[in-house]
Length: 303
Image 1: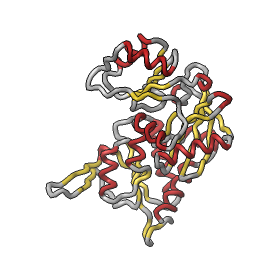
Image 2: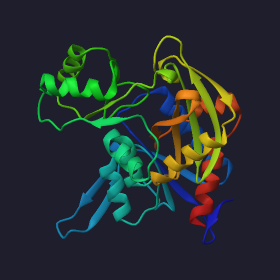
Image 3: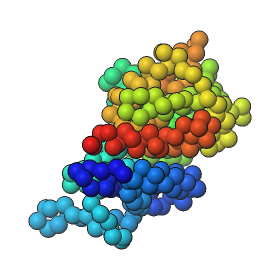
Image 4: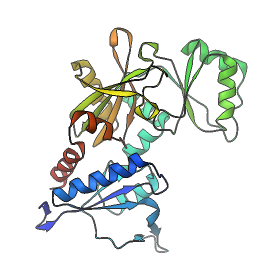
């Protein structure tokens, strides 16, 4: 039995209650089952079952639709950064932290944080903030394409599974897509054509690489498995390992999935870093129990 101070260890696994995605449900079920094997009482809780409350005297409170035991740790498998900060202010240890999740979730913040540590990424222009549609001049669009090339990758700041990512091949397409996203934050990037349809997903816990897979998809420039890509286990080069760990550390993560692109001569380039990494595909093809290793890391951190 896993214990803290002589008592059985108790944790919460917080997930998003509005996402009815089978992959997420299966991950939650597997992680709870893995915790039970280790003698850890891990309770899965939807974020919309919790009531983070600020009382009139300024004290923080938390109530729930289900009876809960005060946790020794919280695995925060969500992007509800307001709830995450509330919990941290109450003194709870979150894996990952609120700051790490917030930076990974917003691509502009992510790339700014990576830039602080000189992490190699595609050339990136952060889009202007807008209250309504993005109305930009021809000069703006011309400048973007002069800087980034004849093709431009537009990524909405919030997005998962390779969605909300668009390859645009003309000034007219660029301006129209900026209108279509209706004022939402975005970034613009140079296309890494040598990596179209293929990338690497590097899975990391603590400061250790657990394993990696190469993802490939012949029908799209995005290689995400959710979109139809296929994953195969791969051995990383020392350069790939070093860059993935550098990106992981730059964002202050306990665990992550770092996506690497293939540049010229297969030079590694960071595409993005995922704080709420879904590791089921990696587990299935590798036989590595990522959930078990994550729980071991958490136990070691708080013991």
